[in-house]
Length: 449
Image 1 (tube, rainbow, N blue to C red):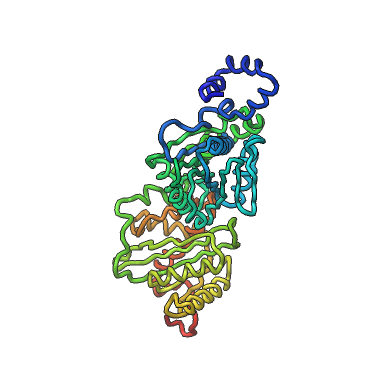
Image 2 (spheres, rainbow, N blue to C red):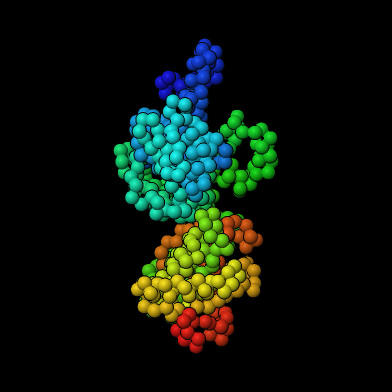
């Protein structure tokens, strides 16, 4: 069946129904695999030259099916031989993109179904094409491999844009195109992606796919979320920026002169660590933020080195930031880890010194504990931003996204980066007469640095 005939029949029930009645049972069974006959317009690839087709739609709108069918069609037509399948975690790729009810295995007809080898992270089609799975939480996986087609799923959930950049750098074979699917979230780098040259955006709503969703579920969703901000984002796929009640706004962070090169002669620099309670790809992030205070009493956020890391991984990253910015103090939040933070940082500093990666094992360390709630700690820091006293020495998308999503009532994602930022700027705000706690110097007992 030609694409034009399939599209004309699919969109015209008066033509479609007689056509279906005229087919033999075998032909009707075969028609089940003709995606263009069943797809809605937003589920079909756009015309023209594009590099990224971004399907921005609400939950259950059919974006996963659209992307899986696009990958299948490109492979069947011989236009794709090396495919990258990228989700937030390895489990997401497996459970949604490959094995899910609208994933590649489910949409593939028996004569074109690929072989799935989970241990190799590979799908192999009968015509020789293959797809490899990748997790955005491990962006280093995407360094090196070349692809001619990619599917990036739930991009707004990815921890940052490093995986996206690595994916695009490897997308350089043949026509080299990517289909990206996501329910949007207010992410600065996602906004840039949507507006980038070569990106075509298709939009859809949960209710567009009502024929394939449970009727009572739709009634419940409409009653609970229709007309709300969450409903606009999660059901209708709207890209919303500022979160009502958040302590920081985009306008606050975009204020003229906010971003600047790191100034010379900072009077004090600290690196703050807010450790994750657990490790692994599904854990919270460990917040690691470096900040300084200048001679005029202003504050500069120097670096955000946060990430989902092992204890040794985040400790080494924190120590590296300490050395990079010649910090006066490394601050560890002890509520989640107690003295564990100090011990892990000590071991990392000693190991890096033994490896020749830093001059010595000495490192000034201070333990801090939360005696007040997050709101009480964060509000004075937000006030510094409102007063224009904090500048950012660069663009820290992930940190700024979390700042603009953080509500002091506890809503939003776990604010690990924000917590580290608050600890750092709080320490820089303290006077010498009111230290946070008594300092401790690794490798020494006299408190000297």
